[in-house]
Every structure is written in C-alpha cells, then in structure tokens.
Amino acid sequence: MQFEISFKQSDLVPFLCIVASTFFFSAYWFIFVSKNIEKYFYKKFPDDKDRIYHVLFTKYTGFLLMGVIPCIFSLVIMPQYTLSDYGISFSKGTNHTSFYWIAALSPVILIMNWFSARRPEVFSLYPQIRVKEWNAKLIIHYSLSWCAYLFGYEFLFRGLLLIPLADTIGVWPAIAVNIALYSATHISNGKSETIGAVPLGLVLCLLTLQTGTIWIAFGVHVVLALSSNLMALKFNPEMKIVKSVNRK
Image (cartoon, rainbow, N blue to C red; front, side):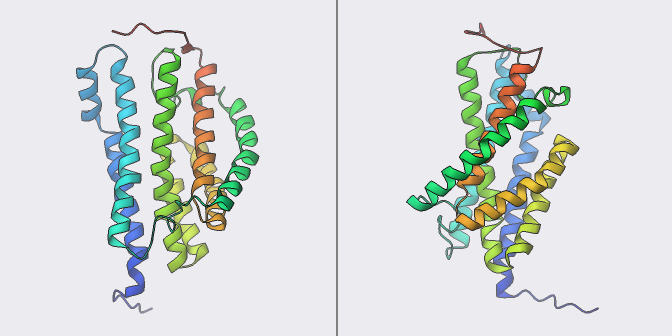
C-alpha cells in the first residue's frame, strides 16, 4: 500500500486540535501526579491544609490548562472558529434545550451514584481531598473547584477536540477520536470508569453536536462529579461532615 504523506491545508485543523488537546491534557496530568508539587504543599502548609490546597491547586490548574489557555490558543491559531463554534454560546433556544437535557439525565445519574458511592473502591478515589472532617466551607470550595475544572475539561474534549474535527473530518471519525482519548483519560481511575466513559462520551458528543454547545456535557459532568464525590463523602466511614473544623 502507498500513502500520500504530504501535509494538506485540510489537515491543519484536525492536526492542531488533536495535538493541542493531547499536549494541554498531558501538561495538566503531569502537574496533577507530580510528587514534587505535592511535596511542596505538604512542606509549606500545616495539618490538613496541605491536602486541601494541593487538590484545589490541581483543579484550578486544570481549568487554566484545559480551558483558558487552549481557548486563547484556539482563537489565535484558528481564527476562523469563534467561541460559539467551540460550543460556548448563550442563545435562548440552546440554553433551554441544555437545561431540559441536564434535568432529564440528572435523576439517572443521582440514582446510579447513590448505589455506587457505597463501594469501597469509590472511597479510595473520592472525594480527592483526603481529610476526615468536612465543613460547609470546604464542601463549597471543593465543589467550585470541580466546576472550574470541568468547564476546562469540557472545553478541551467537547469543544476543541470535537466540533472542529466534526467540521473537517466528519462526525463519526471525530466522535471516535473523542471517545478514544476521553476513555483513555479515565484509565487511572480503574476499569469501571474507563469502560463507562465510552457510552457516556458517545452521548455527550452527540448532544454537543446536536445543540452546538458544551453546556449539556458540562452540566451532566458537574452533576456526575459532585454527586459521586459528595455521596462518597457521606458514606465513607472514615469521613464526616461537621459544623466547624479546627485547623491551625
């Protein structure tokens, strides 16, 4: 078999989107798993603050490395696409559609997490801040950091890595690439999440392309992440929710 390896103009957008998405996620991931960064927080902050600040740092870093910076990169390098083209739009019709889909899918997610959050393997993953006592302030900060992180995550996967690809290489090849990379990012969380990312990724890709926005994917992902974390916190016998926490 012979292949034409010359770089064509039509190759530029899918090439940039796939390479950029891989680079930005990898940059975030190496910061997330960095032992040196973790040691810095453990040396600098006393008591449980080291764990809290480290996780919050990684979440907001994810927001920057997968959301803000790729967004700027995309608008500068591929000016033919606007924020709306990447799924960040606020039209009345799509907002209503997004809300209805999130409202319809949320009960299913909550019921599934209510039962799965009781499993010991879930306790080992969530919540990511490994402290025994949680108060309302910590829960709010942790939840907001997840929302920021997931906005960046969804911009990268359902914005940059989906919509321009569907526009250039076709819908189903774009979905295949998206699901493959999306599922691969869950390997470190175990077999269940890796496999579960395939049907979830398919649904989120189809809804994103149907509506032209990332808001359904973002909203569903927020409900999924917050409910799994907070339910794991509720059922974890080694953690508890208190009115106030005495941390120095």
